Image (cartoon, rainbow, N blue to C red; front, side):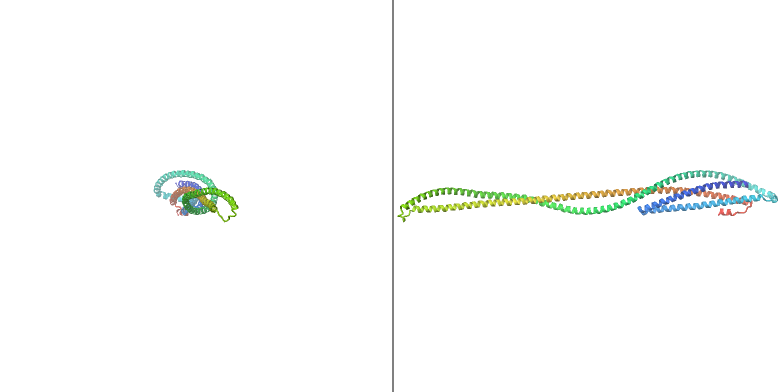
Length: 502
């Protein structure tokens, strides 16, 4: 029975050793994978922390600090599990040493002398009768315990099969994790390349952003200047519109005044011309009539003068004849001659008066013509001056219209620049929102990856704790069995068992 129990213990120990070696390899691979993952996660976290410290708010930095704390806690848990694994390995080594001592003790007992064995056998035979009943009772107890142990062994075999299946699952998961790690490595290389590209793009974007900020500052300054110009232009426009309105009102007033003045001047000129024409026509008609009368009178008087001259000549001839005839009678004077002389003198004076009056009429006619010419010149001058003022006002209106059109064009250009700047700002905000959304998606993916790793870690930890608890229970059971066997065999209690118990 003792040899069977020892063999069973040795087989169980070998099985546990094999399981322990497999578990050690799995633990080492998992620790190495976890270290690699922790390093990769640390590098990624550092990169993300550096990136998001520059770009995002304090909330996201706090979340990243929490994630880094969680990673640190996971590394601490990994170290604690590694310490537990080392303690379990030490307990297994202690059990190995205890088995070696037990085997050495059995070999030493086999080498004793036959005399001592015979004495002991005699003593045992003497005490066998007394202990037979106790042995039977113990045998019954041990058989019951063996049955229990066999049932427990079957149950443990089932558990071992479950553990084997779990180990297979762990192997499959390890292969999947290896594949995932390879994929992650490839993804890391790609992400590193993308990160480098993104860094280069970020540098380019930062340069572009600096240039664009400068351009935006310049554009803002230009917009401010344009707005100031726009304000000035609006003020000038309002003033120009007011001045144009005033000028138009003045123009309308001037046009009305010009029209009224033209009408009044035309009416007055027409009335004056009509009056002057009437006056001068009357005067001219009177003068013409008077001239005609004078001409007729002159003709008549000329005829009379001719007649008088002829008569005078006749009278002179007759007078000369008479003088010659009456030279002697010089004292004698004819009264008809005296009357004729007086008439001639009066007619001569009338002729002189008519000539003077004719000259006065000619002078008056010339003065009237000069007055009419002067009035026509003044009217033409005023009309030219008013035409020139009208042309000047028209040119000023056209210049004001050109200025208004130029100001309108500048306003349209400023509105176009403002619209372009607004479109640029909207596009920049959309690009920044897209970049932020992509980085948030990457963070979410990393968080999901970390959560999956944490879940796998928790599962591995739970399975490891279950395995350690089961190993502890089995070691305690083995310790109890060993203790009972030592009590039965009256062996001394070794220090290795104390270390196991501790």
